Image 1 (cartoon, rainbow, N blue to C red):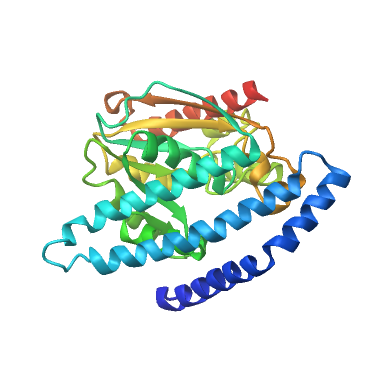
Image 2: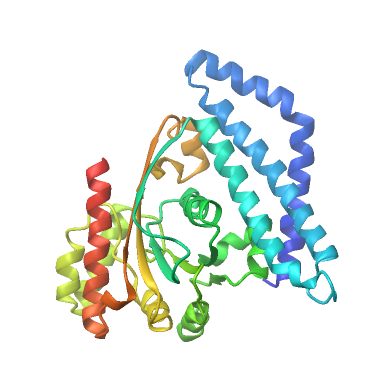
Length: 328
């Protein structure tokens, strides 16, 4: 679907939902609060509804702010045009900071973050586990907000149905992968392009699993490795109990096009209960401890031989699986 048509649909839905929510917020909030008092004193439905209210409000404000940036800092304007990209990165930081702050407060989350990488000193590629949209916000909060790194994200095309991600995300050097595309070479070229010209203070974020973990998906991934005859990779992947084996084509394309970049591996646990709105309404996120551990491999230590690089990626991904296992 072309961007103007998609945005006409998503913006119509967003603002209609936001207006309807304003009209109904009091009775709906009273209903959920009453149900919670009778069934669950943690108030899971009330908290879930409040995060929806915040999303509609924050997303609407984000779209309005993005429009203001387009008006007052358009790239073609002679004086203010140079502020267009910095303003959009600023919007991204504010958007993430707001969601993080409200989410931590509403669900009483307690993050435990351990990492040894000096973000900002060198260009890097960050490879993260994927569980839900929440881990995208988690990575952004740590890297984009706390360390003020200008990130380039590889995300699935379905996220374009979020208006702020669509508008601001397409103004910045990100790529939304069409997972249904039959032109794999074109998708890989767009992904690889993100890695070119990385400078200190810049990085590429990828989610090599490509989808959320499940036992069924794990069995399919192992079967594919078996059919391909990748016995070395299969031996490592069979020991992964909490993550899917990484998809190598996109990851290798980025590595090949950023030979001077370090690689940061990002393990986390605690957002497994945020896979759907049903999870939120059941209260599965309330009071969760969110564990994060990241470590880095300098560019000089990354194998150059293609086969050894594949095995190295799988071994490091197994470390992510082991970290998750230790937290459970």
